[in-house]
Length: 140
Image (cartoon, rainbow, N blue to C red; front, side):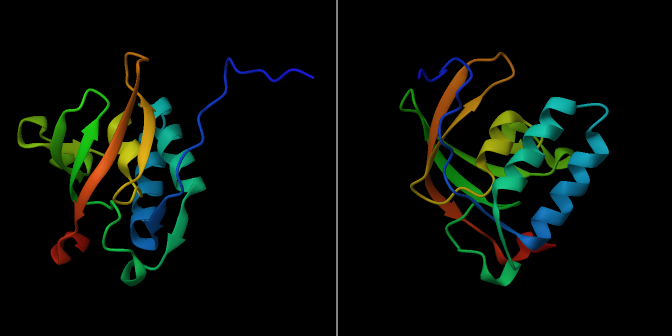
């Protein structure tokens, strides 16, 4: 008995998403499915594997929409970014859209968790969340 490893995906960390974010992100993924099928599928896949909790019960150290977080990439660089909806994205200001491979990888991660993700050029990357700051007004 041989295991096939060629298409094996690394184990992904457990993630938590609020019921509010899950509903909005599910709708967003469905809305862009025709134009961005790969990103929509990736987002839906993340939502499917997430543990959904009521927004008031979200752990404060978990990445949600509007979170300001700091992460370290495998090259040792530390970056501070905000996870936003596509219309608010501005890479120069560190605002990363949920509809990017890294944005989808970040949703639901908690401080200290790491994840591997695949960029648009098919290169694999790994990041570790160092800190998460959730504003009370991010829920709007």
